[in-house]
Structures are given as structure tokens and as C-alpha cells.
Length: 113
Length: 113
Picture 1 (spheres, each protein chain N blue to C red):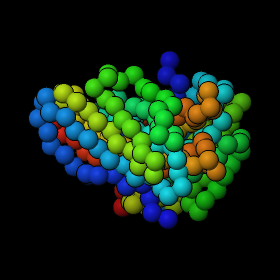
Picture 2: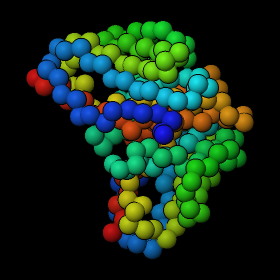
Picture 3: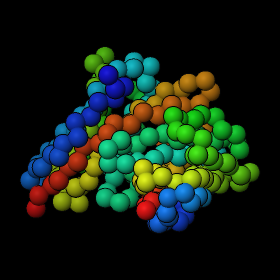
């Protein structure tokens, strides 16, 4: 079974721009979560989607948004980028069969200049 | 107080040593306990997953959960240089129809050849 895939793997943007990241979960997984990982803060939860509905949201500003499509693929958008948004953005999926666990993708490394 | 505490390390051990990695937690409602391994610039990889007190073994890895002490451990036997990575503990609990995941900050492990 293919794992979680994320595109692109690397991005360089400048302040003020916007960015869209994509995540394809493991086949059959309907829950997708997004995390931001930085050396200082560790893994911070952004939001979770299940069946195209946002079920949970972390403490991030409204510049961070997401959506999920009917095939469970998910996108995350960050508008008006700031230097502090430079991070590894991770997507994780989970299944009904193992609801308490998550499987992560390789991440998208975003650098904001 | 953080819900999950994990010593950041770094922890350096010689090849072949037994490694013990630990996390403590404060929320007695946590149901699932996970260990992830994260290599530099990669996404976290799920190593072990358990939901009950006691030990669970998988090859050179043993996960131990002590719910009465709110303490979990990961033991690595016959450690190899390829085990050098950051190890994240994670816990989850069902909350309003979804799962809330809390991650430790990670322990950096270096196994010296």
C-alpha cells in the first residue's frame, strides 16, 4: 500500500506571497491532519479533515486554511506568508481501523525569504 | 505544565547498547500510545503503537506503557548507527467524535559506530 504523499517537497517563497500544499492520504484513509514542525516548537497541530469537513482546528491565524476533496486528498493554503512560516509542513492520515494512530507523509519544506 | 514531557537529549550511545527513551504525561484519559522515528529532513515514521499497559515487542524495539505512573518507554536493543534519529512519543484520546493527538518534542539519539 502506498504511503502518504505530499507535493511539492520543497518550496521557496517570499514574504506576502501565498502557497498551496497538497497531500494524498493512504488509500482508504478518510482522516487527514496537517502539522507545522519547527525546531523550536516541535509538531504543532493545524487542522484535521474528515469526509471533506474540518473537524478540528489548532491555534493558528486565519491565514492558514485547508480543504479536503471527495477522494480524501487535502490541500493546505497559507496566505500573506511571513518569515516565521518557514517550517516543515506534515500531513498525516489515519483510518477507522486504527483510529488512534496517524501515518505521516515526508513533508513539504517551506522557506520564506 | 505540558501534557507530554520528553527529554530532548541528545543521547549518545555506542553501537550495540540498549537504548531507553521515555515520556511522561499528565492526562490520564490518553488511550493510544505511539512512538515515531524521524530522520533528518524526513517525516515521522510510525514505529510502535499500543493502547494497553504492559510491553509490546517488535524486533529490536519494545514499547512499554505504565498507565498508573503515566510513563511510557521505548527500548532499542542492539542499537545500530542507522537508529540515529529523533524519536517522538505521541498519545491520543477520543474527543468529541475525533481524536486529539499530543506529541512530545522528541529525543535526538546518536548511535556511535
